[in-house]
Length: 235
Length: 235
Image 1 (cartoon, rainbow over the protein chains, first blue to last red):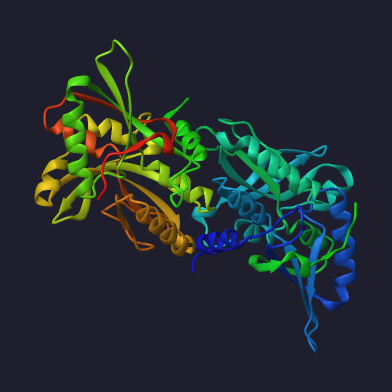
Image 2 (cartoon, each protein chain N blue to C red):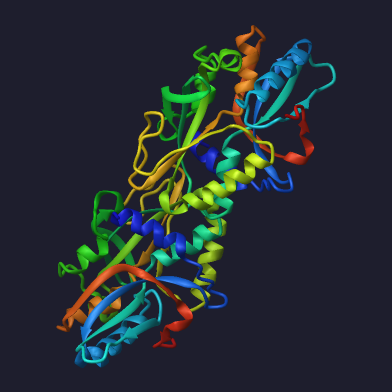
């Protein structure tokens, strides 16, 4: 199955309800050594406090006898699934490295479209050392992972209402809802559509990698009931 | 506002519920002379009986003192709106002239994409004399107007269930649900998507034009409550 098809499978499977904090969300999975877990959690909290993680929810899986743990983080495609369940025709465009200055997104310095990659763009870019997530956390400027979808302008009000609900529920990584017929961070959208840029859910784990922790991350690994995840930060 | 934007506006506004035959549908509008009305209705019924009209519902508007009547027919984009309301990510591709042989669709001989036209493709093609709708009605072979959307394969079962409900409600113009990763009537779809071809709602009126009735048709003219329309055929 292609990455593109897997993406739609997962988006379609989302049942996330932010008002009740229930339902299925899409998760990324990061593999880390047991000894590094505390450090990863600590960095996760630091990144979450600055709003560059999508959510404070993670799930840790350990298997007896194995040194490696799985940390699940919520993938921003979950928001695409939520919008679609409300009848909003989202079109995921791609993901990239977003340059941030003084806490504001400026432009994508690298960007890969979903239709032209067989792997998830953020998974590809995460491994290339292009980010400076902790620099953004500490100074307000640097490079983070983000992705973008486009929505027809007729659905703008409904989209904003749903994203507002998402933010109220403690998800803080919605960076920007663009204007119709305008580029967003240098990425064009289709005529009479607007872009929505959301932080990559894997940012906090990639931040740990920036600090020297060995992490292997896979995007969109599966779908998980959010009520089985734990909230590790409470800003 | 561009045609593309107008299309999404209308799709988004659909509230059609086939099980209760209620809610807003998208309509095309045809202008005909008062004296030609009976002839148009007669041809409409003939085309509807053969399954080449989308629905048996029309609405006639007359203004006192005017010779010209407006006939509203249900536009097939209504089905896109219905699918979207059920959380199915439809992507309208375009419309064209579909060659039919022995009652089966064969291939699009002409096809215009929505993204590359500023007018509705069927409105453009309807005026070009490329159809032979009554020939299809009478012999099973000829050329009709149809349009196509694509859907990710994960939503295939749900799409078929909803289209089944539409057919049960008396709408008969769903021509074909294609296979994933395959062309449909020579039009390609995106990877891991399948195509759905539906007859153009204006076919019965264009058929009247083939018989020499003067008709001017505009696609996607507005959105109307279906319960205010009348059912003119009962097959």
